Image (cartoon, rainbow, N blue to C red; front, side):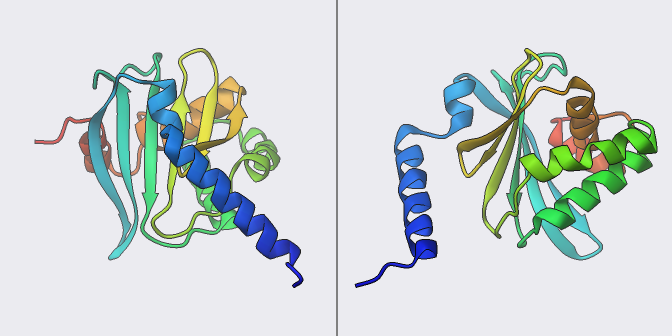
Length: 175
């Protein structure tokens, strides 16, 4: 019986995912005292895109300390769409010059992946200059470019967010 290479790859990915689930997710391993700070749903008009949760040690968020942003996708999100939306938002926020933001596109192409409906991505800010990206509890990438990390996390946590009510809810400031 022939096993196609694609089937073998999907089988191995599933096996590794199960092994990761047995050990627990990366967030709980990296930040064992993490507690949820807040939760918010991101929508565009009537379309639900993702639920966002902010975690920090003992539920106490500090922009300079460790924290994690978890996105649970409510749609199938293609990698190219995630990148273009991120670039658009960084430009709107004037996170850096257009040339610098454009120079980050290859970095995003290396580190971002497509996300299926129901899947989770964690952006774990370690507090020591690194950002770990996980997919469904498993670390898939590490980024050390401090300017990029700040610009990326500012999409949700920075002073120029598009939806202040979303940010307030995410940061536990909602009434």
